Image 1 (cartoon, helix red, strand yellow):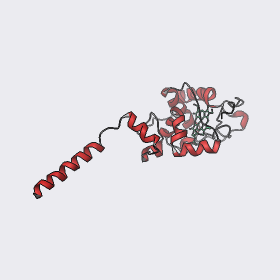
Image 2 (image 1 turned 45 degrees about the horizontal axis):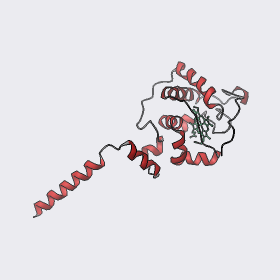
Image 3 (image 1 turned 120 degrees about the horizontal axis):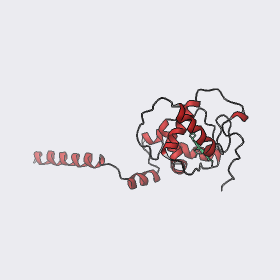
Image 4 (image 1 turned 135 degrees about the vertical axis):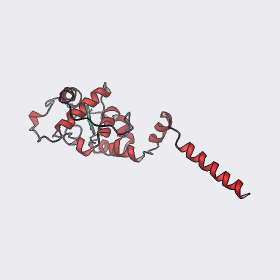
Length: 173
Ligand code: HEC
C-alpha cells in the first residue's frame, strides 16, 4: 500500500511540474497580464514583444544617428531629452530603465500604460497615454542606440534639444 501512495505522490509531482513548465500560449499570457499578474521579469523589463534578456552590443554611431532622426520625427512631439513636455524627459532613461523595458515601452506603449505598474504610475502622473504609430523593431533598436549614446552627455539648453519646437500633440480625453 505504501508503495502505491509513493507512486501516486510521484505521479502527482510529475504532473504538476509537467504542467507548470508547459510553455504559456499568447492567449494565456494576455489573460495573465490583463489580470494584473506580472512576473518579476516583466515587472523589471516591461511587457510586450521583448520577453527575454537581450545582449547589448556597443553603441553604433550610424544606428544612433538613425535613432535621432526617428526621435525627431516620432518622439519630440512629446519628449525632449532634458525638458518635461507631454511625457517625461529621456536623457537618462537608459540608466533608470533596462534596455528591454525601453524597447517594450516603445513597441507596446498602450499595454505598458494600462497593465504595467510603473507605466500606470506615469500615465497617472502625466495624465496622458503614450501613443505612437508605425514603429518597427528596427526603429526601436535604433532609438535605443540613440538614447544610450545620449545618456552620459550633459544636459542641453531648450533650443538645442533634438526636435526642439515640435508642437505637442492635441490633448486627448
Ligand atoms: C503622444 C505623446 C507621446 C509620444 C509621441 C511618445 N511618447 Fe513616450 N511617453 C509619453 C507619455 C505621456 C509617457 C508617460 C506615460 C507612459 O509611460 O505611458 C511616456 C513614456 C515614455 C517612456 C518611459 C519613461 C520612463 O521613465 O519610464 C519612454 C522610454 C518613452 N516614452 C519613449 C518614447 C519614444 C522613444 C518615443 C518615440 C518613438 C515616444 N516615447 C513617443 C508620451 C509620448
